[in-house]
Length: 328
Ligand code: PBG
Image (cartoon, rainbow, N blue to C red; front, side):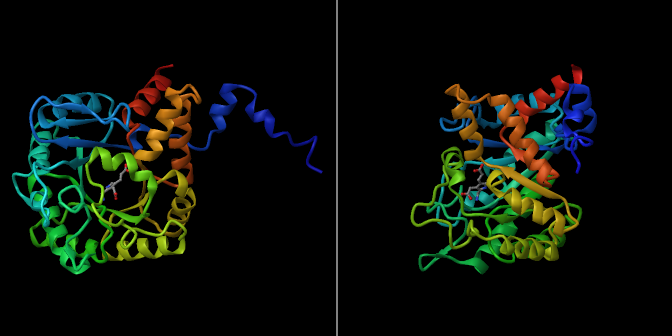
């Protein structure tokens, strides 16, 4: 007969009590800010479907990064839009490609900022798929060599970590081996290990101009209904040498984050993807929700579920809120 002896509300009566017993604390240390870089100069182009997020040319990216650094965000994830696309995604592994140039410029100016690069082909291929096409299908094994080359070229340019998002089988081994062969044994791999075929990527495909030109990605990204498969994917990637395993998207997959975190002793990342960002932004712009509070609730839920690292377009806004809370 717990009541009236036990009254959980006692610990909720004042902010100081709530603060004292709070179990989950989001920190700026957990955040990674994804950014889009485009060729050209003096370009800061707003992405219609992602209010507050822009594509930057390298010069203006550097200006923006001053702010990111001042907010103490530890790292960024870079996505590139190439000058031109072709069947083999040539610019993805060109030492003068958009990402390679951007990484050199960023590391030249902000040597401590962690620069993480997305390893995938979809932004660079004319067909928009994440690999090389043969007979109308993405050819897994042929794609591995390309992914390894992309990773090496990013690290040669100065990237601190690579994040393969293509979902080919065996890519972590292939990338690990290629990096090691080049002497990059210290560079970690953050694997998009459990990446689902998701409609929540819609706004990103505008931002990165990477929508598939035929078919969809269900033959390589995971079926949204599967959870055990996510654990198998993570186990394989860890065996192949992944240093961080990621679950993506985040908010509809909190159960997966929890299971991955409780199953493996490894750092877990969650990607709070474009659609999750844009839905909150759109509702807030309509006055239907409080955007800032909803953002903090969403990010805290990812951490509570077990994410050590959160990739989010909210990184700057959240860092500002967290800093204000510290000063208050
Ligand atoms: C590239 C990639 C995608 C995202 C990250 N890397 C898109 C996709 O797989 O279609 C999505 C990120 C987001 O929605 O914020 N493969």
